[in-house]
Image (cartoon, rainbow, N blue to C red; front, side):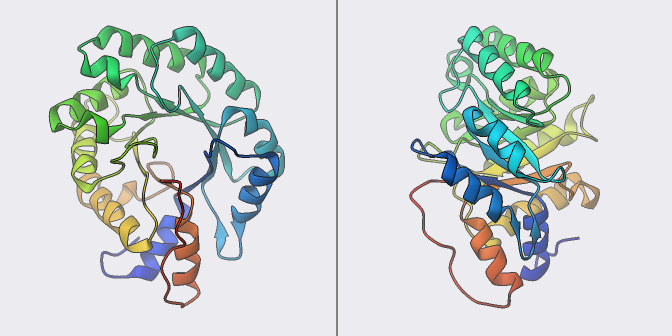
Length: 260
């Protein structure tokens, strides 16, 4: 179990729950091959790699079965174009990915069009019954606790396995305040509260930052939720700091232009 005061324990937990992510607009096959190598580093494997749909098959072929492949859908804009969303979902399923990170139609929700958001969520859930579905709420844009809680409930009602903070493509990504609202929504949900997971993503670059979210999960969902089945941290450069901490070195995480 991770400790609020033990960086080494938090680093081990962050590594076990890490979705090592590459979602650059100019990503290449070589970038994904390097990502998959990094996912199997000297300190141990990550939980998953997260990539664009077009790279899901390549990633699956490069990784051992114990490391999941996640691919984004409806990313990053959160469209209500159901044909597009289902087309992308089918591509990811056919590629053999085990997880789908779906962007909630957050703009529609903000405009009061709950029905459009619900339709996308329910349709994707039906189209990927065997995959783990992680719904990205884009909490930095939703802004208010009320909208974040509504988005969380809507996603959980539709059968989401995880709710996730952010795409990492907006000015505000993961924040502890949004995480608290999301975690409380999971804890309070009558149908999935004991099983649904939480993913923090966007701008998390150090073990200290990851530790904040680990502690929140511990406090709100309980210590039993500190597993990759219920906690994920989406990041690209965080792995550098994890390896530095576990290696006994003191260093800042490598800077990156990608908010992941």
